[in-house]
Length: 160
Image 1 (cartoon, rainbow, N blue to C red):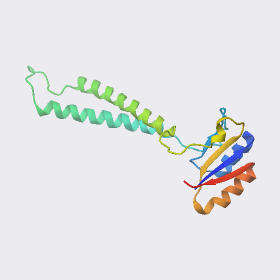
Image 2 (spheres, rainbow, N blue to C red):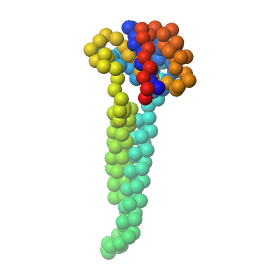
Image 3 (cartoon, rainbow, N blue to C red):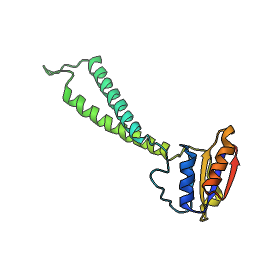
Image 4 (cartoon, one colour):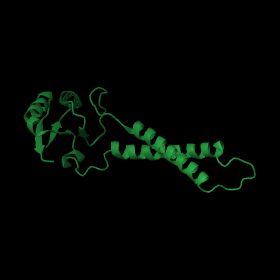
């Protein structure tokens, strides 16, 4: 179940964000809204995805190069088959490419581009602020009371 609360002012919206304490809340507004730093609790994982992408791509490319260099040994005229400088350069470049793709994936996930539901249609051209939050079935009444106590003008329930 999903709750959509309608607010007239930003302080009431911030109070509702603090009292609800949900991580997957979404604020809809026709104009940008600057929310205080302690009100919106939504952890970001973009840096974790960037580092994981860099480590995975760098390690994968290093292992691939070591495998290809030892799979078919070439005559190198006395030079080593596995040289560290080319391996290091290619591994670094692959790690940076993995970090870029991890950041892009993090941007798409944090920006919620893969969600299939949209916000309230009234939020496009009105001065109202809307807060949409997920609600487990048994906590609907408690969350509705908290939102109304924080200053919500109206609260609507929608099935997921």
